[in-house]
Length: 188
Image (cartoon, rainbow, N blue to C red; front, side):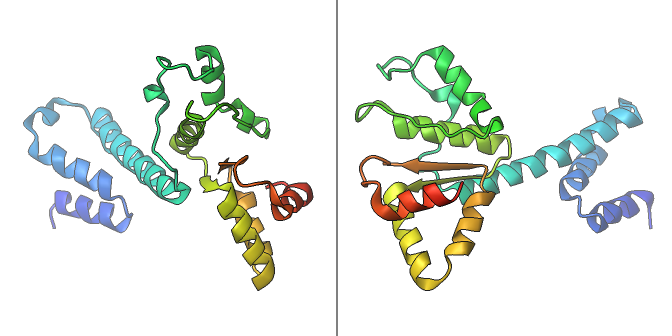
């Protein structure tokens, strides 16, 4: 077996599909031959690391169920959102998460509270935090059902494992006894 075929097999055995693809690309590209070994290895490893990160982010985005995929770079200050650029920059630094603080976004209808929450969620996902977006009324319903069917502890354990829980339409749903009890009894 040639060394190239053996290397391809090693990449497969080590479950490094993206490193393997980069190695195969290098075998067919003439300009690569002028690069030294370390630079070529850097390209191979960088490709594997980048693709793994991208897959983790894609999985976390899927699990987050964000209402809208919003990026901090697309946040518009043209409309009157009632938030300064400095405050926005501070929020997207996610320092509130590092300090384990909650964040309540308030404002009139239509200023972009949900969009801002989703932008913060997306930034957290990009940093590989676990995020979940849920309408408050849906969470209240899930908590009520979980208490009734005995799965409450499991649900609470899942919520506690999240790095960021985004509760949207918080004021519209009526707080409810169930959510009040949950927020009082547990830090989720």
